[in-house]
Length: 195
Image (cartoon, rainbow, N blue to C red; front, side, top):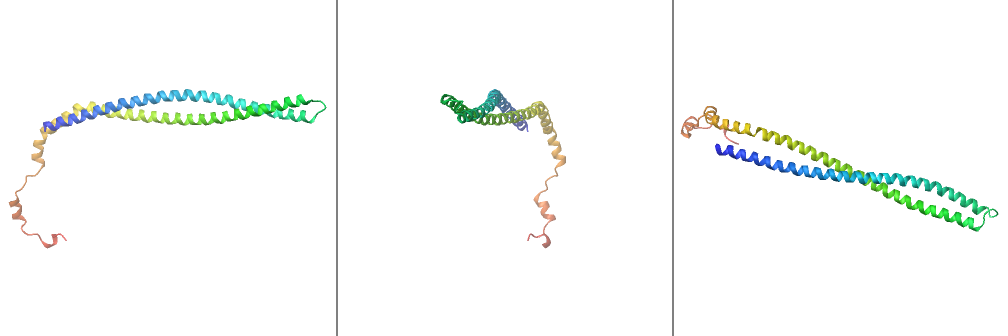
């Protein structure tokens, strides 16, 4: 019985060591995820700021482009008041604003997609951190229980060893010999035969 107690102690201590190592690895994963989260949040803030600026720029360009088209229409209709240079200047301005608007709309779409992607990644990393923290706290509870009760478990096992010899005598009935049993049950009635 002594070797069993030693074996159980060894198994519990090995389990504690494995859990301690796992706890450290979970801590490392959690710290790495926190660093990644900080980096993602910083990048997300920059993208959000740039997205807002680009949206404002697109709004201003749309308004300017509308006005430039109105101006181009006015200049093109009234040949008496405007010469060819005025028409060319109005056309060039409208064309340039149209190109700028196309470029900034593309940038806006890219930034919105990037923002959405970063927000998803932030959420995933936050969930990973939360899960790692939960597992870490559960490991702490198990470790505290195993470490704190290890001495008590050893005492219980030792007392069980001492009491097991007397308990087994009083609890378990004595074995009867095969000859004693044969004398009692020489024939089995047909009703008890297996079918």
